[in-house]
Image (cartoon, one colour):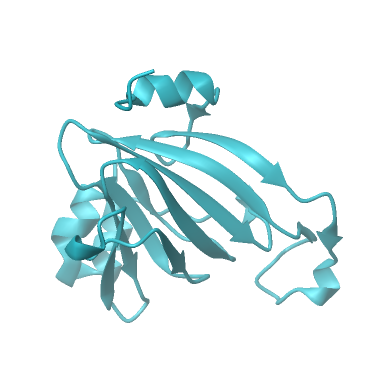
Length: 169
């Protein structure tokens, strides 16, 4: 098979579904054991599995909309174009992580987005895709997921109007 695989190849072969924040995903791992709510920080509203993992694919016309979760999230690069991950602290500090396979361009194979930070992502190149993975610990639960609309995020981060506009619907 050719070394050039399309986004459709990955979506079909890994049976990916549309992700609520944009792009496609499939859960590849959900731990069988859980952490009791009493053993977790108060930001968690119930027990959580130890860890979860997904494949996540964005085409250049997709975004991963700005959102935040209650757990740390480790991103892993697999294939395609580099992916910019935009991370905003509550104080407005912006960090752009470039996930990819070319260290000469400042790209890294793995990166961590700390719990509670606002973040979103988009492939760097036009007419391309980015296939990445996300590992969350304690495991991902939609009860820990928060996404605001563009107007609310612009009020929070007016200095990053271009990023907020790009990464919201």
